[in-house]
Length: 488
Image (cartoon, rainbow, N blue to C red; front, side, top):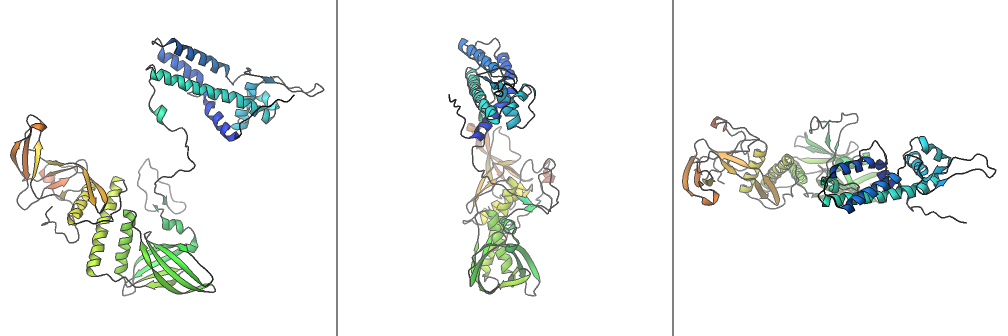
């Protein structure tokens, strides 16, 4: 006679199943099945529960009792072995003992104690075969228990927190893709404790694409900018991002400031590269950080007399600065100033914004700078023209509240905070009633003194207890804009 017992094709999947139902069988676990059923019976108590539901609860508890694995009870079969001559016979061992021994001795590698030790006289295959039946049945009981809890919940007999149904219990993915920032520090640096602060010490720097490329010393390139006197004005640790060598020539793409790719070609003579040629550059602007870095690099390059690329301490190539007209240089300076404001706001609000790759005007620049300074906790000049506001209680307002919103600067939707505005000598002129805002509501025309501006701040970031605190703490300092005369 041949006895065939079919086992799962993927043993690891079954191991995962058994591991997940194991806590239901352990008395010390909060989800031990006895504790679960005791809790359900206490919660429904004397409630009006349908007979069918109570019967399901009763039958399910009995089924769990019958599936207990901590003893010697037989669920389906037991086994015993002995030599043909009748010597060295084992004790009679139940399928429950075999399954429990597999779980503890073979899966979690714990010491098999009590009744489980007797099962070690049998092979791993025998223990696994018993475990497949026992824990598959237990998994089916687990599903039935969950369905019972759902029925009691739907009948409003049990209140179960939504997280029990919504929280993830498995990954369900072959890879995890998420946006994050990584930081590196010299070997031996102390790891910051985020319970104390979310700020990193100076030795920690962002792990950039350049840092990744420079993990290979062969990619190391040093970029040095010098002025007309030969003095160094700036240096960059750059990296070769791509190289395409063949027998007689090579091409290198060198990433500088993490944002501009300089392209070169060389002739190869033996182990040396000769006759280097510059093939152009490509600036990256897919994020505001990249755009700011590339724009700042171009401005620094323009102010120098040469940009040298050094490899292994030797100069490989030197480039003269690009030729910019005064107008082009001013445009780059304004762009760098504007994108820096956006990058600063991104860090303050902890939110990445769309890159500033479109057009913007001076009014956008002023509003953007105000938003940055306000988010930094500064008191700044605001509008100079009158504004009409509604007072629900009909009393002249002491401050003008401007709602939070967004500001489009070259395609970047920049969040602006809720602010309050006031001028110590502002006037409030009643202009009408506003019945839609309340029975006593009135409208007022709020106006600063002639030629002066309201002052603005963000409540919570700045404490203003009286007019003596209303002092501008930071000016706009924008290229080509006179704060005293600009009208917005």
